[in-house]
Length: 329
Image (tube, rainbow, N blue to C red; front, side):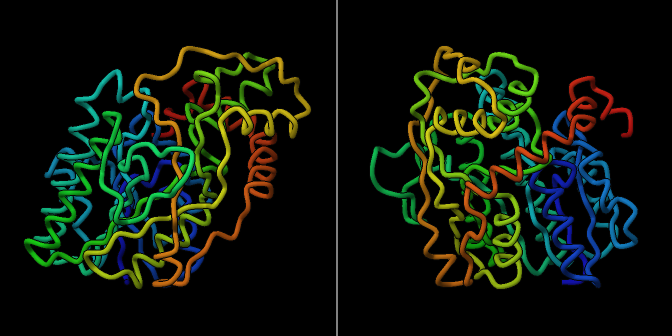
């Protein structure tokens, strides 16, 4: 790959991926297509925004015309992160999620096919599989059974990508990851919400009884996996990416409070989210066997370093909470 188009590169995972790739591959050029919605934070790109091989194109994947602007340079590969991704927001505004995640992906597939890209990696989520009981794991053969408008919109985009491979021979790969965490995650997500509210001694909302279980994947491990899928993944295949770090929301919150030396009395149980899935857990053995990937950052290490980053990132948090981060767009 010489020129790579990354969508959603102002966001949490996308910005980490661009940073990872520019550090790892000196000859690589990256175009970042991002609409700079509320979760697109220019501060996330400080480490590489002046890199000579990096260019940001402000554009919305819902617009074919704006996608074309990102293809002004010849593009060899596409890694598609851009998506509306917050489940609570999908419950309030499902139409936006369908437009961005389904129609936006279709627009990107069409332009990529027209331009003859050599590899297209569609980054999806374990939420498309629905909810697990107390035992078992999601595999690539698990039927899709999404339970939220967000998950349904991602499942729809997955099926479009699959259809382009089978209909057109389009060189697409799908990855489905478990819950990511790490530095620079937008504060509406669970881990940064817990940390930021604890630092301010504010009540920390926990849905239901806090027993919902998630499999946590450090964003750096995820970037390594997506890189492998881009370079070595077999067209038409799905690769599940999981961290082998299952923990209930309540235990996760308690662990963070302990790291911050804050009282558990800050935890406040609130009415459960509509359609809240009970448990996610991924079996990543396929990507391990096929591409040699395995998670390297255990939750104990990763959570500690993540909490430490947020403790010293008071200016980063303040700029988001005040809205100042938008001023640099």
